[in-house]
Length: 166
Length: 30
Image 1 (spheres, rainbow over the protein chains, first blue to last red):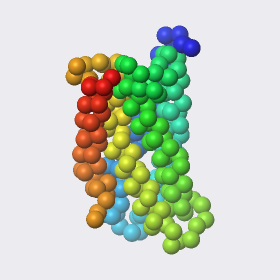
Image 2 (image 1 turned 60 degrees about the horizontal axis):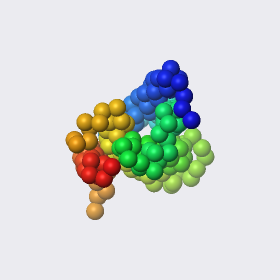
Image 3 (image 1 turned 90 degrees about the vertical axis):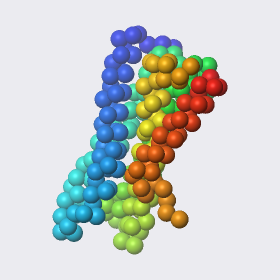
């Protein structure tokens, strides 16, 4: 099944927009918020934990969802979803990128967001659980930051075969 | 031992290392 060129273009545009929302906020958390928190005076920390972080996490996780859905539709619409998922000839690069992205999406929805709900007090949980939840969320957020580097390389390379130095 | 992902620079270095590995795998295998 392949979509029209116009529909594929709109899907790619939406994929990039939602991807910027997702990875932009991922990098905000890792390059700005996490390193800065220890330097913020205690009386100001709730401004981040109670107001900024929950709002950022909303756009972060739904950005991840939109990126995944538009990405899968784009691969389907261009006719290479199966080839990419099975690392078919000429599609191994985008296949790696898609698997990195899927792992990152799963980390967001099944680990980072549930742990952040505990750490930020969005759901009721014993206070003793918060430090461990915050640490797990941070390490999986770092995992996603690490994976975002090869993931973006693979995504961009799909339209630039020279990326593979052959 | 400290988890390397606790360090932001190490996180970026590991990401670059994975990128190189992927480039080598794809260039030679696909």
